Amino acid sequence: MPVEFLGIAATNDGSEVTPRSGASFDKAYTLKLARAHEEYGWDRVLFAYGSGSPDPSPAAAYVAARTETLQILVAHRPNVSYPTFAAKTFATLDRISDGRLAVHFITGGNDHEQGREGDTLAKDERYDRTREYIRLVKKIWTTHEPFDHEGTHYRFHDFVSDTFPVQQPHPQVSFGGSSAAAYAAGGAEADIYCLWGEPLAQTAEQIASVRAAAQAAGRSDVPRIQVAFRPIIAPTEELAWEKAHRTLERIRARKAGGPLSRRHPLTNPQNAGSQRLLAVAAGGERHDRALWTPTAAETGGAGNSTALVGTPETVAQALLDYYDLGVDILSARGYDLLDDAIDFGRYVIPIVREEVAKRDAERAATGGRPELSPASAG
Image (tube, rainbow, N blue to C red; front, side, top):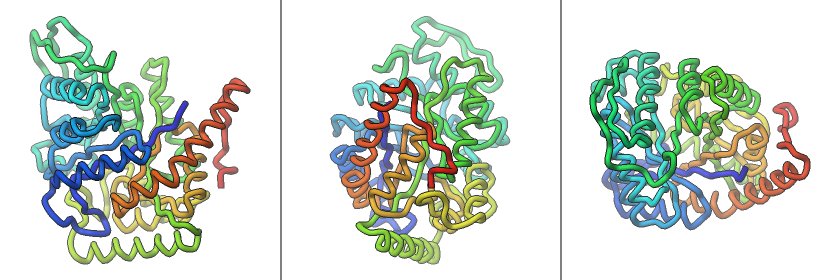
């Protein structure tokens, strides 16, 4: 299967290494960054969600109306709107984008961040709610007759939407998490399952858990797997590692000037994914071919925070190691958002696409996907 690349649709120029220079929603920068992704070979960009951040859906609509081919991934937390409302919103957005939408449903791994918008459910209850929510949104997208729903978290009667997505049967549903409850919910409902960048062996274990959950839910298919990294590339290995250590110092300087994010604590994170990243970092700075963990350790395992360091060729080969495990959506976001998106698109994406085409040709010739064991990937 052809590989896909997911970038970030940041609404301002701030990152872990630099504070933003203007408003939280800078229209000119948002569009410039999105168009750079479109021009340099990325498939899709993510509009992330935070309790105090610009709403991702109208920001995505703004970009979708001003781009031609770039696909849109909109993050959404079920606690902030009723599923009937969300289904109509996303169907409308799929219409605006001519069928370029996917939706990433966020359960929420931090009680304090969830509580900022009135969400008081415990973590496992949130996963149960998300599972019910996704089922309802998909049903609303595909049902043309009024129906009732009496569930654990939602109840309504005689509802039918008059707004349906372009994509049939519906836009793709994306989901992430690294706990047993997450595997169960996402394995049952997701088209795409999202993981953060861990060493190959741990990634293989998580993929197996997702597939087992899908099988336990009675699915005949399995979710596609996405893994996220922070690429740090340069023309030579020496320059790449100099850049990596310089990036780490910039993160530390940025922390000294104020909080990196209100979404995520720097210590003792509640969510299993961040705990796993910190455990990986505690186990060593470098793993496999190019995985580097100090950026994760310095930010408390906040989201996509492990780096791949090296020349474009080295980073591309590291990404191909994950492809060989069964990962076919590669999420990447640099620290200097615009410049790094251009460099990654210009120098890394073409290498990966060419090598994936070779692997797919080999698979077609031999009748199976070439597999790479974690032990041989370094």
